Image 1 (tube, chains in turn red, orange):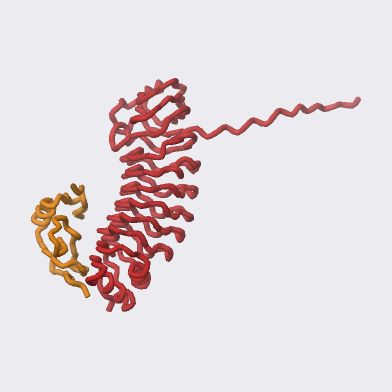
Image 2 (cartoon, chains in turn brown, yellow):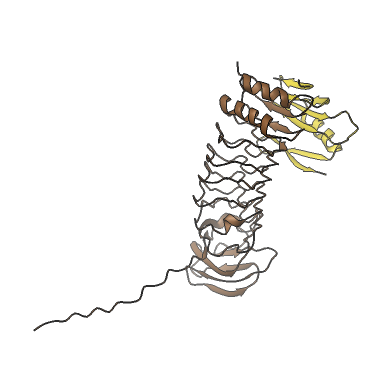
Length: 302
Length: 79
């Protein structure tokens, strides 16, 4: 007797599109109860639904909403779909309950201003790598201020960013994604202040940067990308305060500033960095009576 | 050649620099640590070793500075 085996193929399941998904710990400190989490919103048009890992759900929400987890205090995921332009912790509310952004999905579609979105989320340790919408942000002031991010997704370029004042201030990042140029950034004041940056990507140019006030203050940098000439800088006050760039690179930066930056009356702080004789020549021209620069640094290396 | 300098001061020294023309707004301001030097092409300089005194002078020109938790000054705002 012959057996005929019949196989019926099932059509492949289409991939699930990414959905803005947060991981929260409801019993961390916050303004809602220990079994709750409040999704914070701000001005703008919202129309979203949510589901949680313990089966809660809500639909047609247009502003803040507080979720009560029936399972009691614990760690949960919250998935948000619909129109959700910006989360808005702004250093308040349940900022300490957020642990991770597991997926970005359609977060922030059309909302290129993300000021203070995750500000103060001190327990936020990682963000997802589907960052297409984040790479369209133009204003990211305070966005991740005082978060606990040790690294950023390799896909994050921030190519459209114009203003990133305090965007990663006091975040714990040690490096930036290779490929990040920040070539459109004009306001970088305090952007990486008190971060733990030890290196910068070789691609970083900061070609449009005008305000670099306190940008790298108290970071751990000792070198700079060769293409970072700061040709547009008009305000470098406190820019590298407490930082020591190696003498060869800092001297080259002074040469680049003298030859490539046409602005006069610029204040620039090179931290404790020292310069060589070549750097001294450029520095003397900049701080002379024509260019009127004010430069503070560690002086001539002897 | 720089017109004003603060070279490796004994204590952190604060400064306000203004051009000779009657502009009220400071053209540069900052501070210099003992392991640092500052050089400027701007004509007029006043220096201070007292942070509060410097802070008060800057405020007269609408520049508000404060100290952060680590004792580093920062610009709160300019009006």
